[in-house]
Length: 250
Ligand SMILES: NC(=O)c1ccc[n+]([C@@H]2O[C@H](COP(=O)([O-])OP(=O)(O)OC[C@H]3O[C@@H](n4cnc5c(N)ncnc54)[C@H](O)[C@@H]3O)[C@@H](O)[C@H]2O)c1
Image (cartoon, rainbow, N blue to C red; front, side):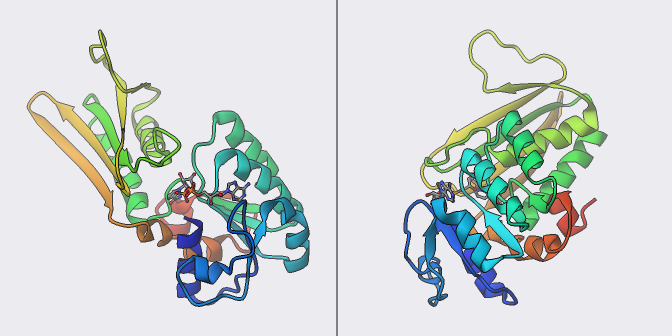
């Protein structure tokens, strides 16, 4: 995703890419890594992030890494008075709390899915849940075999939208054995297979009918579609936002 983010930012124009960080590929030009023309900026080891940020003084840092790493990076980035766009997922409740604490003095857009389509999907899921109270709700998500976290951040956010509409519910991740569906449950099911980019279906079912909302990402470019807009939005702002704010989907 780091490469996809670089590609989308370079293609969208109007930005100076001044640094890149990772624990691997250190010293490689980030444009070449992203499959574009050389950008004249090489990947720095993330252990040097504080010094590099002091030198290049970015307005915004984009993070697609891993939950623990992102929490750590956010502290350093906020100390450098830069804002953040965070696409990383898989935060525990405690990590998310710490992340928001670290970002208290700066601005950040945090979204487990930057695709415009998925942000519209979340909004429609909330609307459907509001209008289909009492229906059985099941969320099914599918991703590639390398994905580290489950359920996906996108599925969790769909569950939040459903809960906001129907009230506190019991979330059941997968079912096995003696586990007949109880009223008010939200079932969540994760498939991990091959190279599936990302698919999410929410089923609202009752006796006699089923209504489904489904989003399918055909390529990682779909996730990148919102990144330049999120960077423009957060530059110079304070506070924590999500892609709903960026896209005006409130
Ligand atoms: N928001 C979205 O639209 C969206 C879309 C896809 C994936 N994601 C999430 O983005 C994250 C990255 O996904 P991915 O598929 O690129 O994973 P990946 O494992 O391919 O890439 C993660 C990268 O982070 C690097 N890394 C590890 N520790 C680091 C650190 N301390 N600082 C900087 N970089 C570090 C790794 O070396 C690796 O290159 C995951 O949490 C994933 O769920 C978000």
